Structures are given as C-alpha cells and as structure tokens.
Length: 227
Length: 191
Image 1: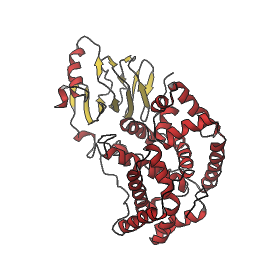
Image 2: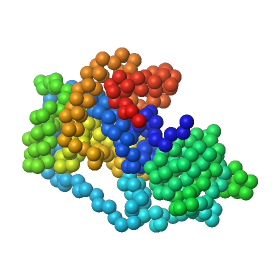
Image 3: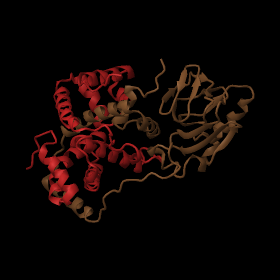
Image 4: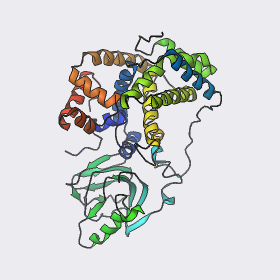
C-alpha cells in the first residue's frame, strides 16, 4: 500500500525532533499543505509537552538564581521577533524552504539532465543526504530509475504519476531501494518536487545510464565531490 | 527550597505569559522561569546526562525566546505547556546542530516552529485542556515498557532505531510499543 502521507512513526519522530533534519524538512513541507497531518502532529506535541511538564531537575537555589539573572540581563537588549512577510514570486515555495530558495524557483542553479528534466541541489548535508528540487516539463516521462537508498519526494507544484498512482501538490512519497519506477508528469503543467536522497538515484535505461556518474558527482556521498 | 509540584500550566502561568506579551513585565517572566526552567533543564539532561552546561544554556535560551515570542502565543492554538515544549525541543536541536551532532545547512527554526493553526476556535481551548488532562492521567497508567519507549523518544530525543539499539529490542517492537502507547493516550486521529 502506498501512502501519500508520512507514517505515524515518522510524524512521531518529527514531533519528538529525532528525525534527521533533511527528512524533517520534507515532512514540514507536507505539513504546510496537509491539515490532517498538522492536527496529528499537534496532538503528538501534547504528549511531549506533558512529559516535559512532569519532570523537573533540582539544582541549587543559588544556581537557578544565577541563571535567572542572566536571562533578565539578556532580555533588556532583546527585540521581539517580527513576523515574516511573503515576497512576490514565492507562491509555490513553502515557508520552510525559503532559506534555500530566497528568490523563487527560477533563480536556482538548475542542471539539465535531459531536455525535459532539471535538478537543483539545495543542500548537501553531512552524512551524505542530498536535498534537491526536480523540475520536469508538462507531459514528460522521466528516465526509468532505481533508488540506491531511501528517497522522500514531496510534490510542490503540478502532478506526476507512476505505476502506483497519481501524486499531487503536498503529497509525501517515501521510496526505498527496492523500488524502480518511471514517473510521468501530467500534461497540464510542469512538476516541481522536493527530493531528499540518502544516496544517489541510478538510471536503468541503456542511454540514461550515462547520467549515473553525474548523479553520483552531485551527490554528497561521492568522494569526487568532497574536495 | 522551591519545590514545584503542579504539572499543568495553570491559569497564573497563562496570565504571566499575557503580561510578558502586553506589558513586558519581567516579574511575570520570573514566574515562568521558576516553573519552566527546572523542567527544561531536566528535558536537556535526559538527552545528554551530565551535560549541565548545555542544560543551563538551553534553559536560558528558551526563557529568552519566550520573552521575544510571547506576543505570538495564542492559547486557542496550543496550551502553554505545548508551546513551551516546542520552543524547548527546537532550542535543544539547534544547540546540538551548532555543536556538531547534526551538521547541517538546515535551520530547525524554519520549520519546527509553533504551528499556527487557522482552524483555531474558542472551543478548542477547553477541548485542549481535556485532552491534556487525559494524556497526563494516561501517561501515569501506561505499562512500564511503554513509558520507557515514550521517554526514550520524547525526553531523550532518540529515534526509534536508536531506542531499539539502546533497549536491545527489535525495531518493530519499539514502533509497536510507541503506537500502543499513543493509542491508549487517544492521540492518534482517525483518517
């Protein structure tokens, strides 16, 4: 069964903040669009809150007084946080990605892998996780490929389908290495997805195999790219 | 000696956060400090036993964030306990990120935020209090093995697979204990 929401296990780890940051980023992009999962996380947060509230740590009164006076000294200089404003051209850019996409999708450094398929790396994380956007023209078929590690895809704009179904804006798709597929973008619009890759994608078509060294080169787990 | 006995964010604490927001009342912040700072320290020490300096830094940081964000607190979206839990959780992650455990370009503040909920309504607040009371009572009645995994996950901040290694249990067992516990606390929403 394929699910377009993160599993309860993933949402629990998200709520407890034990999910790797790159995965948590993907979950938060989904949460932007999914009120059901937001409600689930809200309830999971209550569990953490009650657990935090029921444990205290005794330190000496003098020690706590010292910490309190530090805080009181620090806040005299502090300014209240301002609410952030939304800029033009950012309509499909979820709030949690704005640090990586400050000027909209078009301003990113896109690498053309095929005439209809481009990739832009947002971040190469320590530990070899790559965060990237894929951008595919309307109606285009992606080269057949296999995942060499876990991959999370979140649809930001447009829609695509594969053997298992149709995925629309906000859908959260988790694949593991056993999965080989050939996605196709719907004809009406281009499709932009956030992808979080634990290790590089591998193309399985005879021509597109030529892309594999490129995929490996741009993936942070590659020795080539570490210099 | 100041002992903190009550576990709920009672109305006087909610009054305190309002006074911080509207009147920039430092005495109100002191009341919040007295209640929450020892809890935030305990929350940090659970993740890194013995790391007193870290616990002190984070407790101070959280209190400063509370001061700076007080005007963003909305009782209709989250209880004070939940709001402060999310701030403490984010501050703990942020501290670990800056100190090397999770080197990353990602700033957890960008998204592990206190979620704004557009569907918040006045009835929510009362419902929330009931949910919290139920969770609080439920937590104390969970079997030990379920309490143990929940505390690994929420207090120690361990992933399910880290918890399974530390407890010497199969991953599937950890996952099912967490789910069973969440089910008993009626936290899981029906889809």
